[in-house]
Image (cartoon, rainbow, N blue to C red; front, top):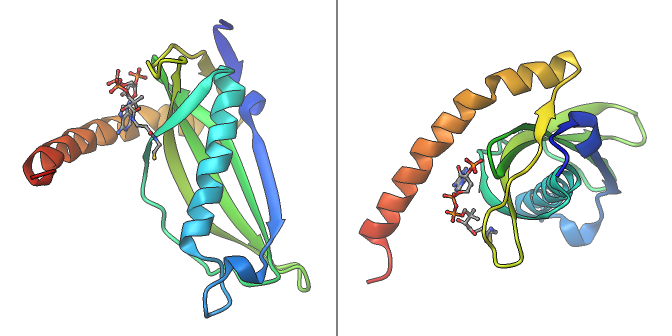
Length: 167
Ligand SMILES: CC(C)(COP(=O)(O)OP(=O)(O)OC[C@H]1O[C@@H](n2cnc3c(N)ncnc32)[C@H](O)[C@@H]1OP(=O)(O)O)[C@@H](O)C(=O)NCCC(=O)NCCS
């Protein structure tokens, strides 16, 4: 396995036009559809980094900052910002562009944790990350704090599943 990789090696861009099958009755993109796009680009980015199969372990909160209208172009960018032993934090940024006016907005951002797995589903080690740009360095340096929050959240979720789970 390659020991380290640059963030740019896991960079993914996906652009598509918003069409009626993916919009709600207000003519804006369904939140669930956008979350599926976010998960897609994060998975591709993590696979580019690890060159292994991956599963989504968690998604941090997604705040929908601006609506994405029918006819807009929606563009997602993703790259791996930080890694643990088997997990990768992927940053996803979602932008919408009004193709007639050229006005663009950042509509959402999220961090996902993807875990590299072997064929039996067991987690497997991944290369570390080398940040280069200011944005990459800033996200890399703040990643441990976010990982701590996720660790606590995972324990809370497991406790809740034990308390309120299958009866
Ligand atoms: C994610 C999964 C592979 C973890 O497997 P596990 O046997 O519990 O293994 P571990 O506890 O060693 O966790 C492996 C890594 O995932 C990380 N991880 C696990 N759950 C996590 C969570 N909820 N949030 C963030 N990271 C998580 C661990 O911190 C660890 O990272 P590290 O190796 O970099 O330190 C397993 O829980 C799983 O398969 N979950 C279902 C995934 C899935 O189906 N996703 C699609 C959703 S429908």
